[in-house]
Length: 412
Image 1 (cartoon, one colour):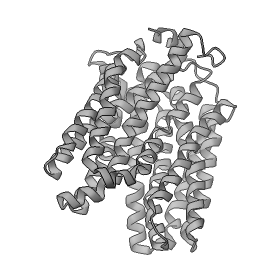
Image 2: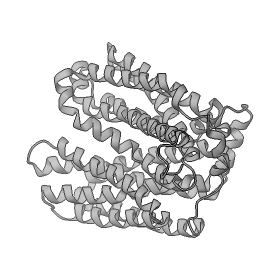
Image 3: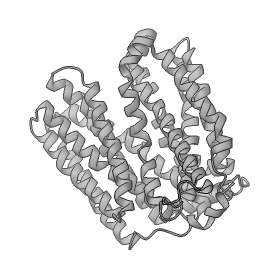
């Protein structure tokens, strides 16, 4: 993809394809954010307990933590375009089912359907992006893709006040219509990549074994786990710290912090395109995580200081996921096994999304917030050590030629 030829039909089509795929990812991640902002209304309507409400929010994390690498291999078996189309259709169906749910059990079933569609979508998209972007722009496109999660959640946080007026069921219907629209257009717009089309079932376990046996895949997955622990534990702690500090509604401040995180992900792509090193982005993120969380939890920061430190940590911290997505095409054992590699990364991310907040919550409940840095700072320093190992493993950080070798085949 040559950015200096945006008006040539072949390249213009690729711009449209990339924009469509990125938009699909944001719509998929909005399904996480919509549950977060709807929990108070859902609990009120169904008289649901905290545990049931937590499942409504955490269903996606549980699915991803238990099945990421297998789901990635399944996406390749289905074919990337079919997985994207089916995933968006499942998200739409889950939303429509949830909008009419008579009780929390039906709503949980609907969320499970949405979750399956979510993972089919977010595992198919980066596989296509890594191929159609081309060697010159792959790092930037893959890093920009990493912003899909904070972008979707942030958007939902900003529309939160509207939900209080229109109701959570109407929000589900709007999300269902958006996903159905993407499913309708996906077969016509999404790029067909021969190496990512459907394969025989005997390849399923072979792909999984190849990814799990690749040390570099396991290294970046471990890094993603540590990074996700830091990010989501801070997102979990932020509204609680703001509430303890007093001073009004925390939701707009949390949305602003996540908006900065989204900007950090995109900035990571721009810096990589300008010549930044993958390992350096990861190292910078963990250094800031260690410093910011030490100050945040060890002292008595004001409300403004809490927001500033969270913005700093999640903004610079956004460099790490963007760099790890950019590293994925380099470490994947072949283009055809890239979906399983992305699945492994997603599984590591979801394990961190679950583990980080759970450990921090237990720690703070037992030892108070002022001792939380004892947990978060060493974890960040371990991440820094892994980043230095990534520097050694990836060498000069030169773009891999493997995904580019099939780029010509992606044109329709």
